[in-house]
Image 1: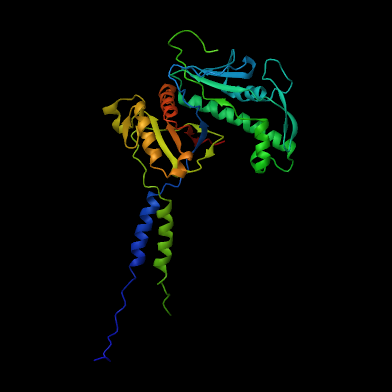
Image 2: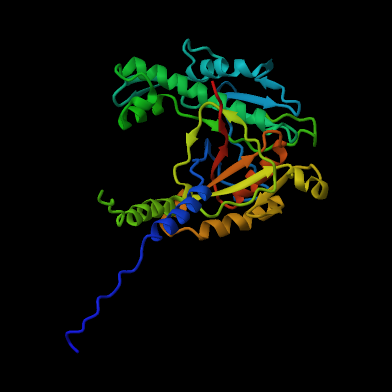
Length: 202
Length: 144
């Protein structure tokens, strides 16, 4: 009896591959590998008090306000502008190379790795829209502003940290230093209902 | 001719299978709004997809146009919502994250490029009240 050890027939596993193939194909199809891309922003905190207006007083020369109306027309400061021009205007505004009294105040700051550099520390770019402004235009303006900062930072990276051709190629510390020279200050302005009264936010 | 040994084939396939199971996000919602995202040049990749919630803004899709009209709608999860409902949505989404991930909670606004800013500003104001301050304007990469 003990000798009669029957050989167990092996389980036929040839179809396992097919089954797992099927599962694999299912997951392949359902997977969305696209990583979401976009422009990141941090909103300001909500005011504690409903009525309290947390508008900051900003010196007029430190402020570049871009207004977009419901037809998608742009106004930068006091003038009409085309979207293609916004980048150059923004770059000139952020840099204020010649210490123009109409452009933001310059503060000389001592920055690690870079040394003394003039910084328009207090500049603010604000984008105001009407309720009817198409989102696409608003987005393009935001994109253009990011482009303006990126180009300035790239320029500085080329100048100060030679082998690097772009801001993104610098080390973490170098990037920090460049960020201190050109801090990104785009205000997510309080919405303003222009239809309510004719007043314009100063 | 000796037959090739295929006994390790299932293991191989299983390995690939597990990889795809890991990366799959099953929470894809069915879009009820039409979204053609604006195109931009200077986009960043979303750092942590697991900490991100989406808000869709746009006109109803072709199939739903007859029923819901063409006005801009906000979609949360699988249904249309009002801007005020964003508050509870954001709170739920955030509390469903692990505590150490909560500071990285981000809201991605996927909006149609023709949506009026009014709707988007309303949503942004609610997000501020809900203290969800990190947002991303979702977009497509523009071709040069």
